[in-house]
Length: 285
Image 1 (cartoon, rainbow, N blue to C red):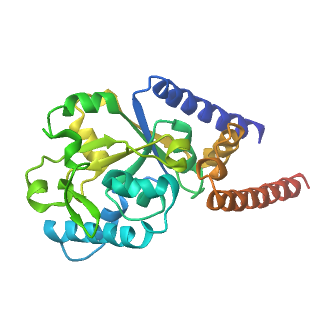
Image 2: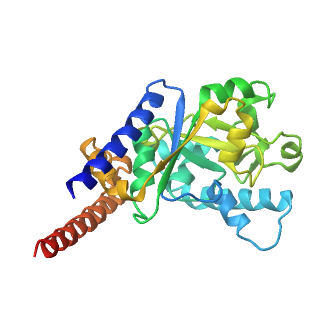
Image 3: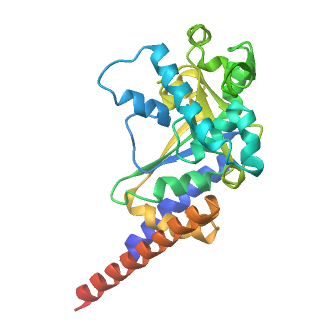
Protein backbone atom coordinates (compact mmCIF):
# COMPACT_ATOMS: atom_id res chain seq x y z
CA UNK A 1 0.00 0.00 0.00
CA UNK A 2 2.82 2.41 0.86
CA UNK A 3 4.52 1.81 -2.48
CA UNK A 4 1.28 2.45 -4.34
CA UNK A 5 0.77 5.68 -2.43
CA UNK A 6 4.33 6.72 -3.14
CA UNK A 7 3.86 6.11 -6.87
CA UNK A 8 0.70 8.24 -6.92
CA UNK A 9 2.46 11.03 -5.06
CA UNK A 10 5.33 10.94 -7.55
CA UNK A 11 2.94 11.09 -10.53
CA UNK A 12 1.19 14.10 -9.04
CA UNK A 13 4.43 15.88 -8.17
CA UNK A 14 5.75 15.46 -11.73
CA UNK A 15 2.52 16.75 -13.22
CA UNK A 16 2.36 19.65 -10.78
CA UNK A 17 5.90 20.72 -11.63
CA UNK A 18 5.28 20.70 -15.39
CA UNK A 19 2.09 22.73 -15.03
CA UNK A 20 3.66 25.18 -12.57
CA UNK A 21 6.59 25.82 -14.91
CA UNK A 22 4.19 26.71 -17.72
CA UNK A 23 1.98 28.89 -15.52
CA UNK A 24 4.93 30.82 -14.12
CA UNK A 25 5.64 32.25 -17.59
CA UNK A 26 2.30 34.08 -17.49
CA UNK A 27 1.63 33.04 -21.09
CA UNK A 28 -0.40 29.83 -20.77
CA UNK A 29 -4.09 29.03 -20.37
CA UNK A 30 -5.36 25.72 -19.01
CA UNK A 31 -8.57 23.71 -19.23
CA UNK A 32 -9.34 20.64 -17.16
CA UNK A 33 -11.82 17.94 -18.18
CA UNK A 34 -12.89 14.99 -16.05
CA UNK A 35 -12.48 12.54 -18.92
CA UNK A 36 -10.96 12.58 -22.44
CA UNK A 37 -13.94 13.69 -24.51
CA UNK A 38 -13.71 13.11 -28.28
CA UNK A 39 -14.12 16.83 -29.02
CA UNK A 40 -13.94 20.18 -27.26
CA UNK A 41 -16.97 22.37 -27.86
CA UNK A 42 -18.74 25.06 -25.83
CA UNK A 43 -22.23 24.46 -24.47
CA UNK A 44 -24.21 25.98 -27.35
CA UNK A 45 -22.35 23.76 -29.85
CA UNK A 46 -22.90 20.62 -27.78
CA UNK A 47 -26.64 21.30 -27.97
CA UNK A 48 -26.76 21.83 -31.73
CA UNK A 49 -24.32 19.02 -32.55
CA UNK A 50 -26.54 16.58 -30.65
CA UNK A 51 -29.30 17.07 -33.23
CA UNK A 52 -29.67 14.41 -35.92
CA UNK A 53 -30.38 17.01 -38.62
CA UNK A 54 -27.59 19.25 -39.90
CA UNK A 55 -28.42 22.86 -39.12
CA UNK A 56 -27.59 25.70 -41.49
CA UNK A 57 -25.40 28.58 -40.34
CA UNK A 58 -28.41 30.90 -40.21
CA UNK A 59 -30.23 28.42 -37.95
CA UNK A 60 -27.23 28.02 -35.65
CA UNK A 61 -26.86 31.77 -35.20
CA UNK A 62 -30.61 32.17 -34.74
CA UNK A 63 -30.58 29.60 -31.90
CA UNK A 64 -27.65 31.38 -30.28
CA UNK A 65 -29.30 34.80 -30.53
CA UNK A 66 -32.58 33.49 -29.12
CA UNK A 67 -30.91 31.75 -26.17
CA UNK A 68 -29.00 34.91 -25.26
CA UNK A 69 -32.13 37.04 -25.74
CA UNK A 70 -34.09 34.84 -23.32
CA UNK A 71 -31.32 35.17 -20.73
CA UNK A 72 -31.30 38.94 -21.23
CA UNK A 73 -35.11 39.11 -20.99
CA UNK A 74 -35.40 37.19 -17.72
CA UNK A 75 -32.17 38.12 -15.93
CA UNK A 76 -31.19 41.68 -16.84
CA UNK A 77 -33.98 43.28 -14.83
CA UNK A 78 -33.33 41.28 -11.66
CA UNK A 79 -29.51 41.44 -11.67
CA UNK A 80 -27.73 43.85 -9.35
CA UNK A 81 -24.27 45.27 -8.84
CA UNK A 82 -21.55 44.21 -11.24
CA UNK A 83 -23.78 41.51 -12.76
CA UNK A 84 -26.33 44.16 -13.82
CA UNK A 85 -23.59 46.18 -15.50
CA UNK A 86 -22.42 43.13 -17.46
CA UNK A 87 -25.62 43.12 -19.55
CA UNK A 88 -24.52 46.30 -21.35
CA UNK A 89 -21.59 44.48 -23.00
CA UNK A 90 -22.22 41.35 -25.11
CA UNK A 91 -19.00 39.54 -24.20
CA UNK A 92 -19.41 40.26 -20.48
CA UNK A 93 -23.02 39.08 -20.66
CA UNK A 94 -21.89 35.87 -22.37
CA UNK A 95 -19.34 35.27 -19.60
CA UNK A 96 -22.07 35.75 -16.99
CA UNK A 97 -24.42 33.37 -18.81
CA UNK A 98 -21.65 30.79 -19.18
CA UNK A 99 -20.75 30.81 -15.50
CA UNK A 100 -24.36 30.19 -14.55
CA UNK A 101 -24.39 27.14 -16.82
CA UNK A 102 -26.07 28.68 -19.85
CA UNK A 103 -25.35 27.95 -23.54
CA UNK A 104 -22.79 30.28 -25.13
CA UNK A 105 -19.96 30.11 -27.65
CA UNK A 106 -17.46 30.76 -24.86
CA UNK A 107 -15.31 27.94 -23.51
CA UNK A 108 -13.80 28.24 -20.02
CA UNK A 109 -10.03 28.32 -19.45
CA UNK A 110 -7.91 29.55 -16.57
CA UNK A 111 -4.44 31.01 -16.22
CA UNK A 112 -4.23 29.14 -12.88
CA UNK A 113 -3.38 25.51 -13.60
CA UNK A 114 -4.68 24.49 -10.15
CA UNK A 115 -8.24 25.50 -11.08
CA UNK A 116 -8.06 23.40 -14.24
CA UNK A 117 -6.55 20.48 -12.32
CA UNK A 118 -9.43 20.66 -9.88
CA UNK A 119 -12.02 20.33 -12.67
CA UNK A 120 -10.03 17.47 -14.19
CA UNK A 121 -10.10 15.58 -10.88
CA UNK A 122 -13.34 16.43 -9.10
CA UNK A 123 -15.47 13.59 -10.50
CA UNK A 124 -15.47 10.45 -12.68
CA UNK A 125 -12.86 8.84 -10.42
CA UNK A 126 -12.74 5.65 -12.47
CA UNK A 127 -11.67 7.54 -15.61
CA UNK A 128 -8.54 9.45 -16.53
CA UNK A 129 -8.89 13.21 -16.59
CA UNK A 130 -6.98 15.59 -18.80
CA UNK A 131 -5.61 19.12 -18.81
CA UNK A 132 -5.19 21.01 -22.07
CA UNK A 133 -2.79 23.94 -22.20
CA UNK A 134 -1.77 26.43 -24.83
CA UNK A 135 0.45 29.50 -25.07
CA UNK A 136 -2.06 32.29 -25.67
CA UNK A 137 0.64 34.90 -26.26
CA UNK A 138 2.04 32.86 -29.14
CA UNK A 139 -1.46 32.25 -30.51
CA UNK A 140 -2.29 35.99 -30.41
CA UNK A 141 0.95 36.83 -32.23
CA UNK A 142 0.28 34.35 -35.01
CA UNK A 143 -3.34 35.50 -35.38
CA UNK A 144 -2.51 39.21 -35.45
CA UNK A 145 -4.42 40.79 -38.30
CA UNK A 146 -6.35 37.59 -39.02
CA UNK A 147 -9.68 39.15 -38.12
CA UNK A 148 -8.78 42.62 -39.25
CA UNK A 149 -11.24 44.25 -36.88
CA UNK A 150 -9.93 42.65 -33.70
CA UNK A 151 -12.33 42.84 -30.74
CA UNK A 152 -14.90 44.70 -32.86
CA UNK A 153 -16.13 41.33 -34.14
CA UNK A 154 -17.57 40.29 -30.77
CA UNK A 155 -17.59 43.47 -28.67
CA UNK A 156 -19.11 46.27 -30.73
CA UNK A 157 -22.89 45.91 -31.28
CA UNK A 158 -24.13 46.45 -34.84
CA UNK A 159 -27.77 46.09 -33.81
CA UNK A 160 -29.97 45.69 -30.74
CA UNK A 161 -32.68 43.13 -30.03
CA UNK A 162 -35.12 44.59 -27.48
CA UNK A 163 -32.24 46.37 -25.77
CA UNK A 164 -29.78 43.47 -26.04
CA UNK A 165 -26.53 44.26 -27.91
CA UNK A 166 -25.95 42.04 -30.96
CA UNK A 167 -22.37 42.04 -32.36
CA UNK A 168 -21.19 40.97 -35.82
CA UNK A 169 -20.33 37.48 -34.54
CA UNK A 170 -24.08 36.73 -34.57
CA UNK A 171 -24.72 38.03 -38.10
CA UNK A 172 -24.66 35.50 -40.93
CA UNK A 173 -22.88 37.59 -43.58
CA UNK A 174 -20.15 38.67 -41.17
CA UNK A 175 -19.52 35.12 -39.96
CA UNK A 176 -19.33 33.77 -43.52
CA UNK A 177 -16.47 36.17 -44.26
CA UNK A 178 -14.43 35.02 -41.26
CA UNK A 179 -11.63 32.43 -41.31
CA UNK A 180 -11.95 29.45 -38.99
CA UNK A 181 -10.16 30.55 -35.83
CA UNK A 182 -10.37 30.49 -32.05
CA UNK A 183 -9.32 33.50 -29.97
CA UNK A 184 -8.64 33.96 -26.29
CA UNK A 185 -10.77 36.73 -24.78
CA UNK A 186 -11.42 38.32 -21.42
CA UNK A 187 -14.62 40.29 -20.72
CA UNK A 188 -14.28 43.95 -19.79
CA UNK A 189 -16.43 43.42 -16.71
CA UNK A 190 -15.83 40.50 -14.38
CA UNK A 191 -17.68 39.10 -11.40
CA UNK A 192 -16.31 37.08 -8.45
CA UNK A 193 -16.35 33.64 -10.09
CA UNK A 194 -14.24 34.78 -13.04
CA UNK A 195 -11.84 36.66 -10.78
CA UNK A 196 -11.17 33.86 -8.29
CA UNK A 197 -10.85 31.29 -11.08
CA UNK A 198 -8.55 33.60 -13.04
CA UNK A 199 -10.85 32.84 -15.90
CA UNK A 200 -10.37 33.56 -19.57
CA UNK A 201 -12.38 32.24 -22.50
CA UNK A 202 -11.86 30.95 -25.99
CA UNK A 203 -14.35 32.01 -28.64
CA UNK A 204 -14.68 30.67 -32.17
CA UNK A 205 -15.36 32.82 -35.20
CA UNK A 206 -17.90 30.25 -36.39
CA UNK A 207 -20.30 27.86 -34.65
CA UNK A 208 -19.44 24.20 -34.07
CA UNK A 209 -15.66 24.55 -34.34
CA UNK A 210 -13.71 22.17 -32.09
CA UNK A 211 -11.81 24.68 -29.95
CA UNK A 212 -8.86 22.46 -29.07
CA UNK A 213 -8.38 21.18 -32.61
CA UNK A 214 -8.63 24.72 -34.00
CA UNK A 215 -6.17 26.11 -31.45
CA UNK A 216 -3.68 23.43 -32.44
CA UNK A 217 -4.21 24.18 -36.15
CA UNK A 218 -3.88 27.94 -35.63
CA UNK A 219 -0.72 27.58 -33.56
CA UNK A 220 2.14 26.55 -35.85
CA UNK A 221 4.56 25.77 -33.01
CA UNK A 222 3.72 22.30 -31.58
CA UNK A 223 5.56 23.22 -28.37
CA UNK A 224 2.93 25.85 -27.64
CA UNK A 225 0.10 23.35 -27.08
CA UNK A 226 0.31 20.56 -24.53
CA UNK A 227 -2.00 17.81 -23.31
CA UNK A 228 -1.61 16.25 -19.86
CA UNK A 229 -3.31 13.07 -18.66
CA UNK A 230 -4.40 12.86 -15.03
CA UNK A 231 -4.59 9.12 -14.23
CA UNK A 232 -7.76 7.98 -12.51
CA UNK A 233 -5.76 6.71 -9.54
CA UNK A 234 -4.25 10.15 -8.99
CA UNK A 235 -7.49 12.15 -8.90
CA UNK A 236 -8.42 11.80 -5.22
CA UNK A 237 -4.84 12.38 -4.11
CA UNK A 238 -4.68 15.51 -6.30
CA UNK A 239 -7.88 16.87 -4.74
CA UNK A 240 -6.40 16.46 -1.28
CA UNK A 241 -3.26 18.34 -2.31
CA UNK A 242 -5.26 21.06 -4.03
CA UNK A 243 -7.47 21.50 -0.95
CA UNK A 244 -4.34 22.34 1.05
CA UNK A 245 -3.91 25.25 -1.37
CA UNK A 246 -7.51 26.35 -0.80
CA UNK A 247 -8.68 25.04 -4.19
CA UNK A 248 -12.16 23.56 -3.76
CA UNK A 249 -15.75 24.10 -4.87
CA UNK A 250 -16.17 26.57 -2.02
CA UNK A 251 -13.23 28.73 -3.10
CA UNK A 252 -13.62 28.74 -6.89
CA UNK A 253 -17.44 28.98 -6.84
CA UNK A 254 -17.92 31.63 -4.14
CA UNK A 255 -21.43 31.65 -2.73
CA UNK A 256 -24.09 29.17 -1.68
CA UNK A 257 -23.73 26.91 -4.73
CA UNK A 258 -20.02 26.38 -4.22
CA UNK A 259 -20.44 25.82 -0.49
CA UNK A 260 -23.12 23.17 -1.10
CA UNK A 261 -20.97 21.37 -3.69
CA UNK A 262 -18.04 21.49 -1.30
CA UNK A 263 -20.15 19.96 1.46
CA UNK A 264 -21.21 17.14 -0.87
CA UNK A 265 -17.60 16.53 -1.90
CA UNK A 266 -16.49 16.33 1.74
CA UNK A 267 -19.26 13.85 2.58
CA UNK A 268 -18.35 11.68 -0.42
CA UNK A 269 -14.67 11.82 0.48
CA UNK A 270 -15.29 10.81 4.08
CA UNK A 271 -17.50 7.91 2.98
CA UNK A 272 -14.82 6.76 0.54
CA UNK A 273 -12.12 7.04 3.20
CA UNK A 274 -14.17 4.84 5.55
CA UNK A 275 -14.67 2.25 2.79
CA UNK A 276 -10.93 2.19 2.18
CA UNK A 277 -10.33 1.88 5.93
CA UNK A 278 -12.77 -1.02 6.20
CA UNK A 279 -11.15 -2.76 3.23
CA UNK A 280 -7.72 -2.41 4.80
CA UNK A 281 -9.00 -3.81 8.07
CA UNK A 282 -10.48 -6.82 6.25
CA UNK A 283 -7.18 -7.41 4.46
CA UNK A 284 -5.34 -7.32 7.80
CA UNK A 285 -7.71 -9.96 9.22
